[in-house]
Length: 165
Image 1: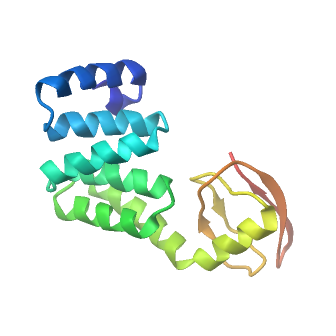
Image 2 (image 1 turned 90 degrees about the vertical axis):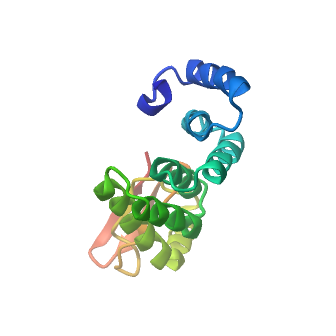
């Protein structure tokens, strides 16, 4: 499907909406629509559709992974962890990918106080996927989410750039 590959997302939304008119409770269609909306940063409708998909088929590991990705992108780390764990427990086809997401999210959850500290220092957020390893405490801050920025932070080794994408 187009949404899975991240191409022609607006077309994908249109196609899936037509399919949903024929079968409005189809969890695969709801997941595809929610995933395309997520990729388009339409988080509210994406969450509604992904939650509906999970309600109709809570054992589908891909639906649970997609819902976890949305929750993580919207800053709900604890909820994302639960969804990714459910995806693993349901027999996800790529367990290493989901374990990687879980590991990064756990680091983020454990270092929440450092993340808050980085936000105070920089005045903005570092985008998802960026690792801040040189924090004033000298500890690894983990994976952060938010808007892009560039600011100076101090580490034991001197100044380091905290760079967002």
